[in-house]
Image (cartoon, rainbow, N blue to C red):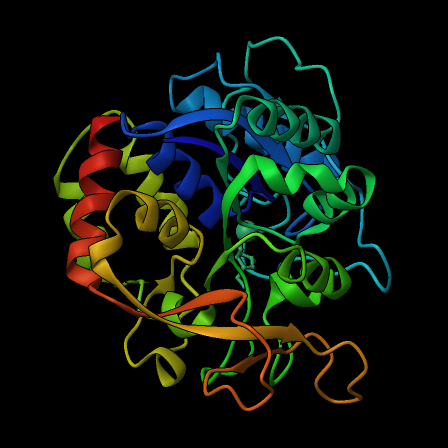
Length: 310
Ligand code: BDR
Ligand code: CA
């Protein structure tokens, strides 16, 4: 499966990249970074370092949009000042890849459209790069078979406002553009990702497996622990972004429902909320599958097994 990964590393983005790059089923054509958890300069540098850590320096990493289409700049709260929990991964020795993330998305997607071989775009951060690419070259829709996005919150409620999830809130207009573009979207919202809880017992299991990068990965995940058992039911932090990659690899671990999803762009208290019409109330056609169920033991088995391979 040929994929593009658009991301804002970020600890959970980093774990998602490590999962993708350790998975032979996936051909990662490029990693395009965007401002989000930390500024664009830092997500780019983190992306380069994570790809080097994965032992895949040939995968190009690109620098992307510096901020949202409209509205204030938001940063992540849980990945530490530098975005990777304060940990200093070694610098990448790979040459800096030429090309802005938006240009790279356009080039790959136009080529895929021309070849009649559409590819999957995975988004793990604010959707700015993809929205700008859609505005510049609407024809890229023919180069995508689907968009799988960690984005949104439904019954679970939000993580940055009572109703909004970070990746949508950080560029709500971009998220709405992507949902409207006509390509089928699979959403991995907080309703799903809160089930991907890296509990202390699960992290201990990762450490016990050995492997070149497992102890570093376990340290990153431990730093990321949001320790909010009142919300999650147990100690440990949710690993949001790796669910997107796991969905590509093992869709049978997931359950979901089709819906028409729109982003609230005017609400005084609900700006950035994803509003799902699951029952045809509006008569609007489905534009998304909203994932809401995870086989968590199966997910962690897959994730730990692949990280151990790295
Ligand atoms: C999302 O926000 C970011 O902080 C994480 O990397 C994830 O993509 C969760 O709301
Ligand atoms: Ca992210």
